[in-house]
Length: 141
Image (cartoon, rainbow, N blue to C red; front, top):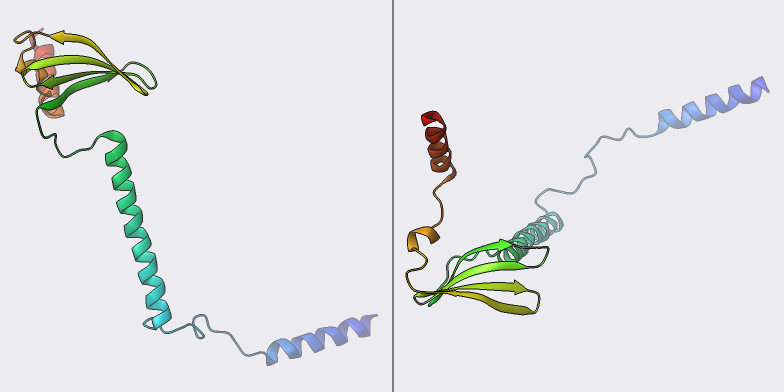
């Protein structure tokens, strides 16, 4: 048994030493080959397409619109539940409070002209301005 294991050890060591050493990257394709450039181009196009699709979905689902054109303008909105919202819109000089649910929009209230000030509907300042005003109020107390 001992002679058999010694014979196998010698036979395997000879075959391992006779094998050609493999250098990493020695059999790789030229980096500027057509196949490599095509693979890189397809990958790049896929990533760019993915960015465009994600941007379109973000704009579509969260209302990242560039601006509203026309006489109607959404002033503000608040979520009332998982799928319900109350939305204040301006139509010309009139303000409407709408209840919005999937497949249904209901007018909740119509505000008379002058009942809502335009300054009330302006968006609040930047975070920095709000923080500074809160800190100054707290310091004055």
